[in-house]
Amino acid sequence: MQPRLSATGLIGVVVFILLLMISLAYTNYRYTSQYPGGNDFLSRWVGTRLFLTKGLSPYGEQATRQIHEMAYGRDARPGEDQMLFAYPMYSVIIVAPFALIAEYSLARALWMTVLEVSLILITFIGLSLSRWKPSSWLLSILLIFSFLWYYGLRPVINGNLAIIVALLIGLALMALKSELDSLAGFLLALTTIKPQMVVLLIPLLLIWAISHRRWNLILSFVGSLILLMAGFSLFIPDWIVQNFRQVLSYPTYTLPSTPQAILVNWLPGVGKQLGWTISILMAILLLLEWRSVVGKEYRWLLWTACFTLVITNLIGIQTATENYVAMFLGLVLVFATLDKRWQRAGRLLVLVCMMFLLLGTWTLFLTTLQSGDQPIQHPILFFIFPAFLLPSLYFVRWWAIRPPRLFMEKFLET
Image (tube, rainbow, N blue to C red):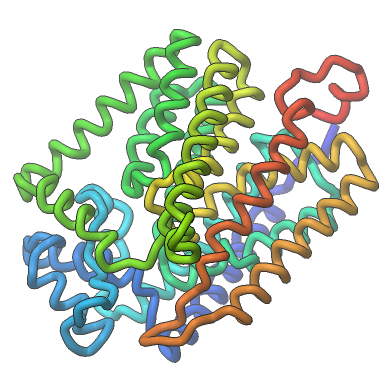
């Protein structure tokens, strides 16, 4: 029987966490005051603030001009990032508490703190979903890695909502695991603030729910999404049309961010054909795995969900490397399987993988960084993590999806 934490000990832990968060927020504030940026957050902060304080549409010209003024000190030129609000109207629910803060540097610092805490929560959610209890030293290294690796730190610095969506995805999967289907449906509806991240995951979860007759998930998701869309239509009736226009214009001012577009840029002669080949192959693999998971237990669904999050970024959907943070759940599943099945050798392999992903991606970023109005990452970074994680998931698939049968396997799961 494990000793319970005393009231004094609990208060001490709470005070320690609060002091840690205050210190983190203060450090972030010093950073944001010295280094302006966070443009992914800036667009949503300006748009949400204008909506809350003046009732203006975040998709309107006034919002766009103010975003450009804060980012560039002028109107954006043709060919530059137009930094449109672009997100569904109900994304203001997430940004609103920070948009009420008049000083952008302070709002951004607090937002970065929330994103950093979210990275920790995503890590613990991944541990829970994977039924993994790593040793204290390995857990410490994993938490540090989740903070510092390229695909985690980049969205923190840019202030991208992808981390919040990744957290919502993890929470939805946990709710499904606990059969809290109504909660899972609501959380999935919220993930659509970045629909390109969940455009394949949501159909998978709905198909699996239908195969298990878990109708509450479907009703909750559909009902929540309708309420979110209809609720904000009371304020701006045509926001869906305005949002759709900005989404359509997004590819016209951003760098190539699909395998096909990148390959066409690299290999004009055969890039298009290679891109379509990758998309078709990914679609075939996806359909095969979706067919296999129908009617299966949750362990199988978890692996397939992680697999689907990888395919989402390879199949030809417009994406961004900031969105890759959602694939961290799949990485934890791989690490958990390696540790539980091969113990010391598995832990060594986990460390090697973390070292490769941490040092390799940052070295590649720094050595291929392109200069301009702002630093531009090399397109190769769109491929590194998915190319690593996809075969890794297949490598552990057999152990990840089958239920524990042997006594030792059951012991390891507890």
